[in-house]
Length: 222
Length: 222
DNA sequence: TGAATAGTGTCTTTCAGACAATATGCC
DNA sequence: GGCATATTGTCTGAAAGACACTATTCA
Image (cartoon, rainbow over all chains, first blue to last red; front, side, top):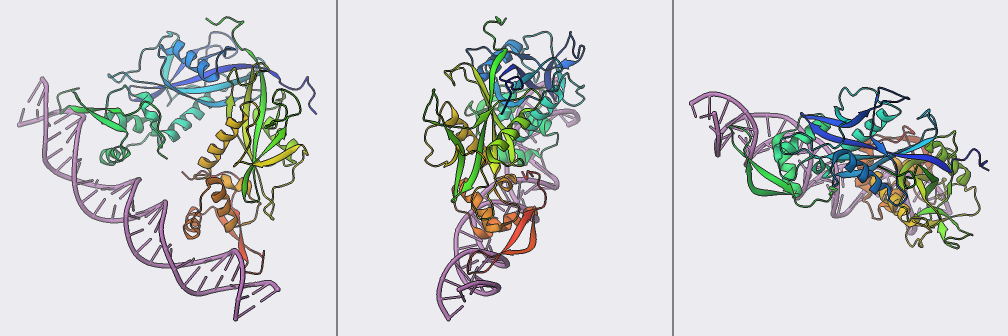
């Protein structure tokens, strides 16, 4: 049926990671500027190759660690992109992963390892190289969907955080205001957080109780 | 950083399809029996290769069409499996798609093209070759999740169907009984179906109104 | 004491779930 | 008329959404 010359037994296969973080009250994605053609001067998503001895999961974690210096971030497989015209430079299949980089307690993104990387806000993101704009779009949709029925927001927060910070994560990702009382009622009913005997004092006002998630694992609460 | 000898620029890449259908009031998946080693005698998922001129989507649709004779079934990308030890026969990355084969009006599965294929019930499925059992598990989980907030059940039904048939689809996939009045109330509130001026008479009892989906596209109803 | 954020409760509406009797067509 | 499936409504409890005031700390 299939002529061997036509069949793509041996495809070039690459990995791309969509790393989100929240900085300056904005959802941002990490990109690098291309210095070679095609798409010279455009931003693209950081990527890497898969070693023969590692799983896709491991390859994505390694790539993210090389990029951010963080080896324990949340990540999951997003989608595999394989349109024949997505890269003029040959036939490439790209497995995309998305990941979340936590804020530190000051609300800025955690340390980033690679100086060529820059975090750009999702709003007003320029057109990216190849089909990377679609990948980001797809990842944002996944993130928006998943934050509503899982504890994925944990990946964007430091270990200890204020309820207000958690609410801001939701507001930024869903791009809408939430009612403070309803939000806290909902969070409390899920019983996934633990109040700590610690307060955080940020300004000249009442200090906030710090919370942490009872478990590090992602919880789905359908 | 990455030594070329270690990096997997050129992976063998294959496609596998998990085709579900409902037959004899059971959720079944289409498999074929292997005639060669490894896993000779085991069942495995039907698969294929990707041509250089087609997208992954197109390759999966083509594979499903070759298999079932149906060229317009519902399908979506499931997951990409790439563990280095998943196939002893070299390094293979497999992009898995899942698809739904509609019943015909008699409640049996639609025509199948490939005589080597057999549909086995999900309950009491034997261990499959390679990591195909995990793939089926993953696909079942996706199907169970998705039927609850989308019109994916449409893919398992003929164009015109009774509300009772729709309810049976839900009951079989979710493996639990549903209340008829609550089910119909819910379906009605979604306003996604259109009652036809046709009745279906199956036995010596009151005939049922036939319905169809207003649109062929999948609808997500959060 | 003023500024700024933390923390809290009620009412209304909507949706899910339990539950059973009547209707209709064929034989 | 008997059989078999189709069709329909109410009540209750839970969760979502609208809505505003008091508490606490520091400068």
